[in-house]
Every structure is written in structure tokens, then in C-alpha cells.
Length: 472
Image (cartoon, rainbow, N blue to C red):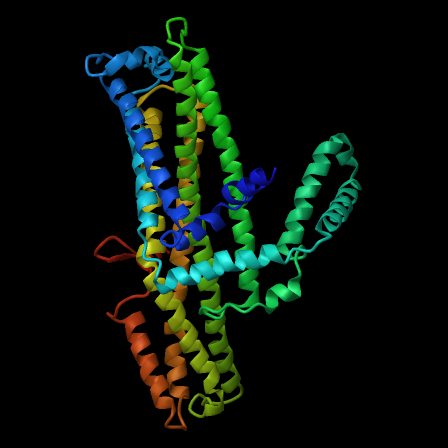
């Protein structure tokens, strides 16, 4: 039971936490390196096996001389594809190697990251240490509070007459989920005062509400990963059972059944790794938006509040900021520089990788689905399923691009208050340092200076702010 609990906490329920922990500790502990080696071996075998199936499909299942021991004769999955070759067209083999290559790129890219950089130390502080503090401070009577909250939600739900038609077990289940989410989102399941009293050592000085948002995003990401893992297990199991039952097994050797079970585990491992990597990179974009953009907006609003306060009921020519308020301006510059340094430092390793791996995830499956939907006749169910997947990925792409575009646009918001702030920095010679800093920042944001944003590609020429300005 303890072993299952450890597996449940690390491999299933806490995907994002464990992934980030392995990234930071991979060059420090032998177990992390062993995970990478196992991933490479599993994925390499999966690619070889899947390329073999794709090659057999490409040659119309006619090559037997180069295959030792007549493996194609005892391969249940291959026999099923051969008997139903009309379903799998010439584009289908492109999907399987594409997904395998995606896994290798993700694993090798994550393992060879430079974990000594400031941005990775910051993410370790945000995700790993923050999550450890969260899990260590859970209250002891959590189950009693959860049960009471679920009963309260259920009683409130039962006040409506139409709910009498719904079975009790369904209402109890959804009331429990709603109660658990309510407690977690409001941080009522832990000792809130002790958790908020813990200070974050690495910059920037993240406000309390964004620390709580990070925890909620981490919980949501782990639950999404758990749901995808269950769906993947069901899908792969149904495919293998369906292929084995629909194939004539009377001529198969005894070891064919062992092979199909081993390959079931390998394919399940590869597919779950693929989903885990895709969810990890996508959730990182959400976390980056939450942390960096939210913190930038706070410093941005603090300067505007200072400007409104000093210009209230005063002519523009006489409005000035007293030097005793310089701490507000200094904090804005300091926090803004910290955030932008983390963004630029993590552009290649974190945020640019989101787009890179996102495209690699979508391109192979979309080639197959679009080719079948456009060039082949499909049943109504198949067509509806194919276009649902395509539109779902399109929506996901729009969400990711919009979030990162909006984030990069927020980093350029200081260009709006700098022309107003500069004339108000007068009356004291000490303001000269701030004016020089803001002049340099304004030149970088508005003129031809280097932009602050997410870059994609080796030349770093395409940024999200470009797409944001062009589209919106």
C-alpha cells in the first residue's frame, strides 16, 4: 500500500511537480539520470517498432525477406492493420514516427537544459518548494471539513425540485468534487497563516495571491494529467483488444500473446510520456502568464496610481513627483528588470519550447486527420470525431498564442506611462538616474531597441508581440 501511495503521489497525481523536480535534480541524483535512460530506451524501442509497422504499411505488407523469424506472421496488431488496410492510408505511417520523434525531442531537450540558470532556480522555487510547503501544511481534520462542505453543497443542490430525478451517487460524487475544489481554491485545506508566512527567496517578490494561483494551476494540471492518463489507458487497451479479437489467432505462435502484452505496456508508456510532456509545456505557458504578467501589471498600476496622485487637481506644468516617493519608482524598475530578465533568460528553454513542442504535437496528427477529412469519404461519426479533434487543437493553439501574446504586450506597457512620468521627475538632481533608465527602457520598447518577449527559432526574430500587434 505504501508503494502504491508513493507511485500515486509522484507518477499519477503530481505530474508537474515531479517533472520539475526531476529537471532540477537530474544532474545531482543517479535516479533522475536513470529515469532519462529508461525513457530513451523505451522510446527508442517504441520508435523502432512503430517505424517497422509503418514501413510494412507503406509497402502494402509484402516485404518478408528482411524480417527475421517471420515476425509479421505472429504480429496480431500488424495482421489487424493488414486485414483493414483500407482504413489506414499512406499518410498514417507519418503519424507514428512523428509522435516518437516528439518524445525523443522532449526527453533530450528537458534533460540537457542548463539548470544552473536563474530562471530554472526560480521555477524550482515556485513549483517544487512552494508545493512542498503546501503539502506539509495540510490540516489534520481535512476529511471532516471536506465531508461537511460536501454535505452543505448537496443540501443546497437538493433544494431544487428538478434534482430529485438525479441518482444520489451522482449528486454525492459531484458535491465531493465541488467541495474539494472550493477548499483548495480558497486554501482552506492547509494552515493558511503558516503558508503565507513562508517567504520566497528568489526574485521577483511574488504577491500572495499569485502564489495561491500557482498552487491552483498546479492542482488543475495534475488533475488534467490524471484524466488524460485514464483516457489513454482506456483507448490503448481498447485498440489492442479490438485488434487481437478481430484478427485470426489460430495461426499465431504462443509467444505472440507475450509480445502483444509487452508492446501494450511500451506503447502505453510512450503515449503517456507524450501527453505528459505536452501538458507540461502547455501548463508552463499558463504559469508564466500568471506569474510574470500578473506581477508586471501590479508594478504597472503602482506607477499609474502615483502619477494620478501627484497630478490630482494640479496643472501639468506644476505636477511633479516628490523625491520621497522615489522608493515606488525604484521598486517598479527593480521588479520590472527582474521579470524581463527571467523572461529573456527563459525564452529559449521554457517559453519558446512551448511553441516548438506544441507545433510538433499538432502537425503529425493534423496531417492525417485533414487528409482523411478532405480526400476520403467518411461516416458521419468519423467525420464528426476528426473535425472535433482538429477544432479542439485549433482552440488550444489560439489559447496558447493569445496568452503568450498578451503577456508580451504587458511587458511593453511601460511605454505608455514613461512619456507622462518623465516630465514629473524634476525638482531634485537625484531623479537624473531614473530618467536615464526610463529613456533607455522607452527606446528599447518603442524604437529599434531589442524587444522583450518570447522568441522562436535560432535567429530570435519572431516574437509573440509581433503576432499580437499584427492580429489584434
